[in-house]
Amino acid sequence: KVSRLNQGEISFIRKYLNQKMGQMGGVIEATAKVLSEMTNLTSLVLAPQLSQIEIRRIQIVKLSGHKALLIFVFNTGMVRDMVIHVPEELDPYELETLSNFLTDKVSNRRFADAVSAVREAAVGDIEAHRAFLESMLDAVQANIRPEAGKEVVLGGAKNIFNHPEYQDVDKAKNFLTLLETKDALYDMLSRSTDMEFTIRIGKENELSELRDMSIVTATYRMGDQKLGSFGVIGPTRMNYAKIISVLRCVSASMNEILQYYLTDDKQY
Image (cartoon, rainbow, N blue to C red; front, side, top):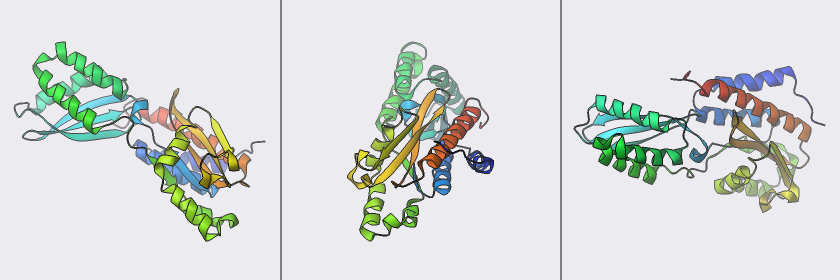
């Protein structure tokens, strides 16, 4: 049976996440922290991948001479930018016009689809700037990879020492070493994103370092779009009913907050 959180616990989670709402990175870090505080366990949060999210806006800002800053704003609030080479004759007004054109072509498209959409548009709609756009897209594809940056944010790594099972120095050391292996943690979390909750106990875990531990994960969304997953790692004797309640509340809070803040232009 899943235990219910009291109103104070629910309010704490919602208030904490709301306070950190500004950019996606703030929400991810806040989620890791609130999970570790509420459960006294080590928490993990998988940040969204560019391949999963849509572009909201593209902006090109002139820096000096041949340099400009290319900015991608995604529907999650995530921002990616890079310095690009631009023809010196392009003034700020023309770059703003190009920014609006690009935004019109790629808004609400996923990153991988956006590149091909701009290439097609450059052939007919804006032929005069085709060479520049082709060069820009080549630079984007070389420097911003949709599947790169397997970002896993941790919270409460030292909480493991609060549990008697991990007073053993070797056990604790092996666990902390595992937390440094972000690729393994990423793969573990990414496999959980198709289910609302995933519970792996002891030997059910694929990673040998987790064979005497449990990991409980949940997903978070923006509307119907799955963005990532989060969870906690701890001893197999953890209070599963309480953990599921915390994860359910955090998931619902994240979904609600992301939907409210990031489906319009409140932050711009």
